[in-house]
Length: 281
Image (tube, rainbow, N blue to C red; front, side, top):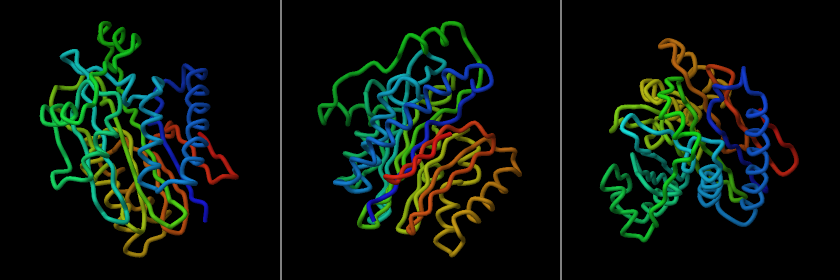
């Protein structure tokens, strides 16, 4: 086995009016999927999902890291998490500010007992490990903020990888939904939005409150562990999401290398790659 990988770039709310942007996102996802897959050939699943998400954080087309949404008080607060399916260790940062790669800060917490930090604690920790100050705001986001656009933003980025040794890992990063109340916590740094064990890994995107309400990633993984096929686990979990008219999407890989994705509104952008076949939407 040479490994498998799937990434997502969140939902694409502009798809009905800006096909050029959609195509740009698809091309970016294909490029990052190939680069991350090549990286996977000589690295673990955990190292690879961090690598892939950092590439997504660097691309201003996506709402994570550079290009993150601005909250109602004019600041960017980001969240990211990492889950190792082999060790079952989970780490994350919530509402961290002024860093380029929230996923790198989350990754560094894997070595500690206190592995999920939020707010000022997360920022102070980043400074303690010499993460430089970085402004993730791009002109487009500043213009949107100044114009007080209120359109729903649900973009998040994520990656699930299965390495050659059969280990799974999942990572997710977000810049938030935009214009939210400061202090809001999204799903991305919780096991509701990013969950992995030895049987399956899942990364979610969408409205964080909906994802948390049904514990989407956790339920999908648990159902696969309990014997559901990955398709059936998604079917049942998304049926429960539908009972609250939830807005979410998810990508996944199981221990057998089956790749799956589903969204409640068909506008999630994703790419999967196994060294031979590239699938992108």
